[in-house]
Image (cartoon, rainbow, N blue to C red; front, side, top):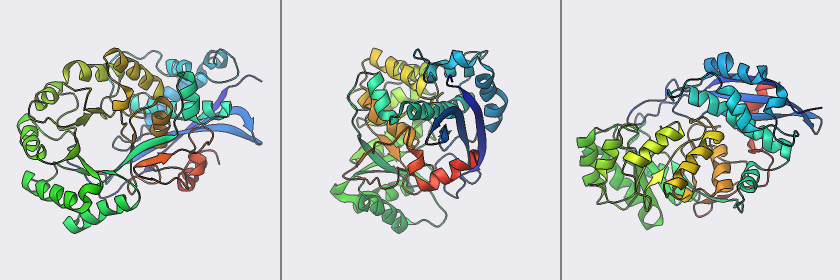
Length: 389
């Protein structure tokens, strides 16, 4: 029987919490959880691929249910198969989702498509009987490396959170094996943020590095004022100082901040990523790119972004995706990226690693699990299985 998708199911889930960054709070945050059900049977059960969108962008249930899922289900099943006819072809499914869509407008539909795309790749790797990272390495003619650098993202503003609590949080990340930690800035005054940064640096000492993230809050003058402060600290990076589409601000900032900068998590297409590389003054010898496949049309589009980077002289090692999810972790291992974000304490159960995987000296080693490996993270899979119960 030819392989086919029999259903695409979505459920919007609350991932709300009282934390905030410099721009938004997460008191009403949601995410879309998707299951792509196939007619392929393994161990007596249909193969199901799962996906979800990264935090910071709300669930896309309306777009998924009313537009993109139907296009896949209404397509000729044979048109969605790979050349062997024995597995699904993610690029053909992506093309079906994007049929009759005008170019541009990469705001919310990119998240809807990226969420389904994650589930499709999970299903494809499961049907192939491989971990996704090994499947990707094989397709790109690369040697798969299951060992991936990860950093701990946290340091959010939180009601009643004083410097002692911030220091304790960062210390807990070091105790769990991380060598790089990240905190938010821009949500309080520059002077208050300076005290917060210095408190964390005093806590972690020479044992780890600190990255700071402004979440796009600053105008150019404020971004420069922070740059003049931050350049005196031994930071891992200064992240997303201004609006993600203000490439001129990003380029101007390099004149005042010689250390590594990072941005890209809010650019949702290879065209926008290309504009950043063309006009944003990013430096391939030190800066970091944070494009997130789950928010930017999925892995199919992410591979186009990587191809663009190669054409502009960038190493894929300069990419450390946003999102803290297992999909980007698989991509990092399979395609040789520089690492991946990690959320040890927030946005659970969607962040983190398969059960039993531990951080050691800033790295995790991925086990050989079929697909993305969601089934081996018990708290996450208990949510996912409700879509097919």
